[in-house]
Length: 52
Image (cartoon, rainbow, N blue to C red; front, top):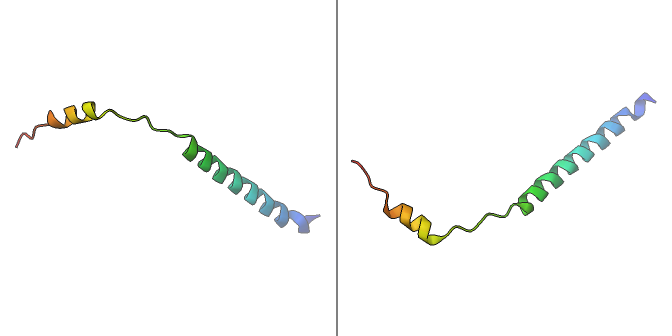
């Protein structure tokens, strides 16, 4: 029935939107940055010299 086509498009839009949002949320919470050591960052900071 052609009059039911907009409803199926709307359902598809919501399904893909919700799956995209869930994918973004999962990527945000799965990412865990590795802590950096203060010695290495401090060492690279003191070794930096301006040439002007």
